[in-house]
Length: 164
Image (cartoon, one colour):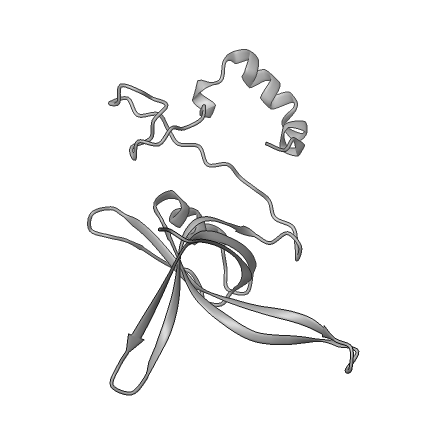
């Protein structure tokens, strides 16, 4: 059974981005998450304990994370959780790892600008609507008809404000 979790917190380390010898893109970072509560006795907000998570993003998500996130930014992460006990000669502990399915900036704390990535069509595949990993892709800029291109150029600001 797979457990899914959604977390909010701070990117605590600079994202580490690698590409394996097989071409798999992997990006990981540590996420610090703590809870705040209002203490009526002190009449102030106080921080609770900090929970630490290792977040790993693969493939296209990993590429986007590497170019979009920086240490200190507040994010929301959704993914599959794995809890592992570990032990060395001197210490032991528990690590909590998240295989990310979605990651985004937490807009409670600031603004972000979204740029949709466009995946170029492959001329060697039978179905140009599929990417190299077999997932379905939406239309690219190359797929637009002349009428759509004209509308896109004249009303780009209105399109940018439209939620999808």
